[in-house]
Length: 68
Image 1 (cartoon, rainbow, N blue to C red):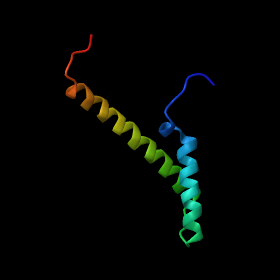
Image 2: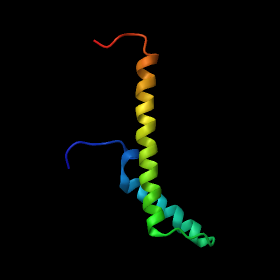
Image 3: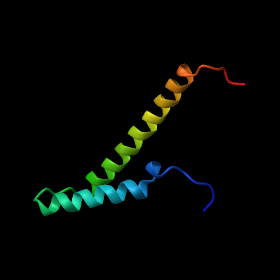
């Protein structure tokens, strides 16, 4: 592998977390199908990307010095 990325943009991490929560939910009678789990992972990643973009825009406006 070349390069790196933040952990929170990893589909593997989010997929594992969603699968873990689905397993716990299943133990209590709440069942998530595979497609719902995949949709949750995609939705989470889209929210993270949007939040990152908004944070970058806010950071530029909140900056006290110009970009060189």
